[in-house]
Length: 492
Image (cartoon, rainbow, N blue to C red):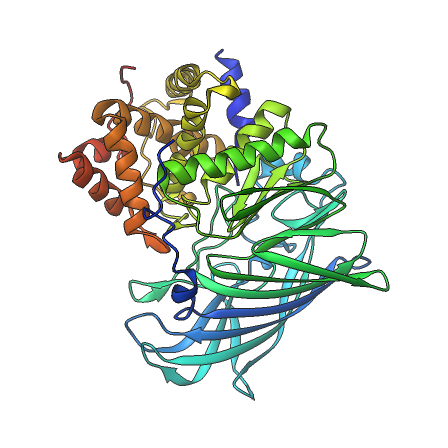
């Protein structure tokens, strides 16, 4: 979840070389052959606001150990009444629920492995994890098939998963396989801070039925057919980290960037050509500076959303409540996430700054690289620094503010602290670094980072190593001082 409105309000208070081989060097077809595949069918009932769905996972064990069970996130369960962890912070409830508090849920009715019923249980710290017992252990490189019947009930909420106004957001509407690492599945709950998601790449084939008054914006390339007031959309996406969609009473515009079809879907935009251009310009600029975008589609959808926007593979949601300048900011920021989260993955629970700081600084760099947008890059950075220093002065406790960035989402006191440490301070860290090592080394390092971690999961040490290698200097101490909170005052 993005915090553009919050950042903009806080700031107001205190005041292109193409690298075809760098990050998008083809190969999606080859990569997809070794990935698990989700085949999902779902039908949206507007009267009950439910999705009745089935999921078939053709699972390939890419871990180095055998598995006797598989664990899945049930993100929809976080919206139920009585959930321990709510996706909505208490301070945001009025904005999130304009029609009054509402609840949703996700239920699993049956699980099969092969053609047999499988044992399963619901666990996790918030009854939001499905654990499926496998009849036979799956060796590394081994395969199995799991079929899950589920029903997701949507809350009336302006969030990733829910309905409101003219749109229905479908982020996390199906069971999602948990990442296995360090001897256990990552079963983190749905925190209200940040984007509490951590997924690996997979292939998707998704079919959704819905009332024909809607059009779909989604991950991958969707084909829509209609009959008797019901539309069926089927989307195929290979080597992506997730699948999401928005159903909306949309008008749509399209253009192309290289081999990518860029689509903008909207219902309340007085200047849709400007929004589409921003998406296309951002995709081209970031392809030039970070590495070619490898997918054939990229879709931006205006929707009912609590914060500025939300990134998904090949697809982003942008809030319909933003003013024009912040709306363009949000489009650019979420487009940057196609690299920092999408192409290069990371654990967004443990290392939120790793993708958010890069996406936020990429947004500022876009304006520096594209002067026609008439946004003053130096003023953006100066405002960010002033805002950050004022935050430290005003909000520090008696023993000093905690300015560390190496915290999990659960360890941030509130959304403001999370925003300042990941977006604002993170951007300043990268800007200071660019000035220190120079543009050639900075952009060269990001191309290397993107290339070496393409369609993988990166950690901070991977990023640091790429900067050290490209700049030919020791930089771990620099990063550590910022990440651990030792840097609070600095010159610009």
